[in-house]
Image 1 (cartoon, rainbow, N blue to C red):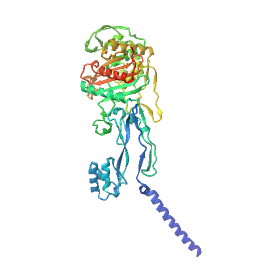
Image 2: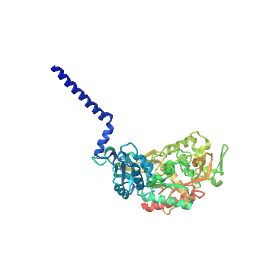
Image 3: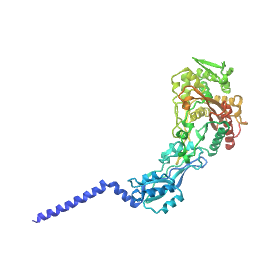
Image 4: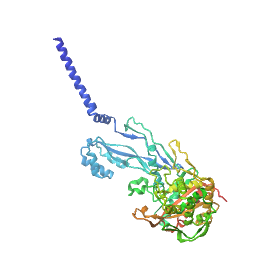
Amino acid sequence: MRNWKINIVFLFLLLIGAVIIYRLAYLQIVHHDLYRALAQGQQGLYKPVKGERGRIFFSGGQMAGINVKTKQIFIYPQDIKNKDSVSESISFILGQDKESILEKISRDTLIEKISNSMSEEQERKIKEMGLDGIHITDNLLRGYPLGSIASKVIGFVGGEESGQYGIEGFYDKDLQGKEEVKGFFKNSSWADGKDIYLTIDYNIQYMAELLLKKSQENLSSEGGQIIIIEPSTGKVLAMAEFPAFDANYYGKVEKLEDFQNSSVQKLYEPGSTMKPLTLASAIDSGSISPETKFNDPGFVKIGDRTIENFGKRVFGERTMTEVLEMSINTGAVFAERQTGHDSFFDYLSRFGFFEKTGIDLQGESYSENKKLRTGSDIDFATASFGQGIEITPIQLVRAFSAIANEGKTARPYVAWKVGEEEIKPEISGQIISPGTASKVSAMMVSVVENGFSKSVKIDGYYIAGKTGTAQVPWSALGVDKKGYSDKTWQSFIGFFPAFDPKILMLVKLDNPETSTAEYSAAPVFKEMAKYIIDYYSIPPDY
């Protein structure tokens, strides 16, 4: 009898234990997420939070990208009773669409964000409504104090709070603060992102952008770029583009291509700025010297194709230095033929025309230039004077750094410091010999002193330079048609002081209302060079 009573008690306790275990399983496993959210709700608003995004500074300390303190508003849909009325009131105060707010308030969720940013007046009016289910917290938005200045270098932070384009995109992981799920206003801790320090000099950048705007006003150019680097290191001092956009209002930009930085993301044909590189290849291979002569009849025939000089000019017997001075197309073809296709192709590879430069900006482009890989005589001939070969402006600048830097190229870079880590210059091995670099530099000085680029001369300084005018192919204009349009790319590339280069600069204008770069890009180069000489107090050569 006694054992029977003990068994009853034991069975009763066993049933109670089973009920407790079931209940615990129900709460902790089946409805784990619900009760965790409710428990968190008692402690405060929970959401993924990050440390502040790292800031971006120009080389002189001017702030290029900052975090702006503002307010954001959240709602608890389950606590909103008169959803239609509340939606209407909030939409009126914030100036947002009522239906989109109502859709969020009607969701079966714990919490919904209504707005990232509010003014103090909007915050005051919402608080005066005195409604349950509305929560206002501090927030940080990305701001760009200098508006459109260097916007295509800096990029912006998009709606997903991730960096887009330029520095913001390339260094997004470094700039991002470390994320933790913490109580928004209780026991929160996180790490801020790294600050980025640019090589860009604000004053030089501003002047470059101003000159591009002037070229648009005076020459009706459709766009343009100016790249200025320190050739011995690859440090980018300015990378300007017109038109630009205000990164604070990136949402108003209609076409995605308007965000692109043409200096690193768009291909073009360099025209006669290619000729110094063609002659450098020929000289370095031992095929010619600056004094080598050839006789120009005004044209060269390759198969069924005829290549002529600009304006169908005939120059007669000329040296290779004069080929540069007078920008003779047939002379460039002659130099390439002396070099040989295979050797010329190898030099183009060394100059970096079939690969990215590695610049620290998001989305860099390059062309494989597949036509040259076929070994066609006509393709190599036109490439020698910069038609039928595609590159980006930054690729051309890197290639010319070999001439300005005793035969070695420098990887262009835009950030010199990321957090506490300093970025060191990356210099290539010998692309051409120092002797070749010196000879081509002297030839380019002769272009400015004696050739078609005399307008670039600055008293007291030797400038090495070359103009380039190239027709724009229909394909570059989005037209499914072979051949070339009547539009042009006009450019001038050069470095100074020529025999101890401190500055390497490319000015490229898109279809200005002039016949050649001598009257468009060259004057812009001179004005920018004079500004830099004064700005840096560069001593004269003579």
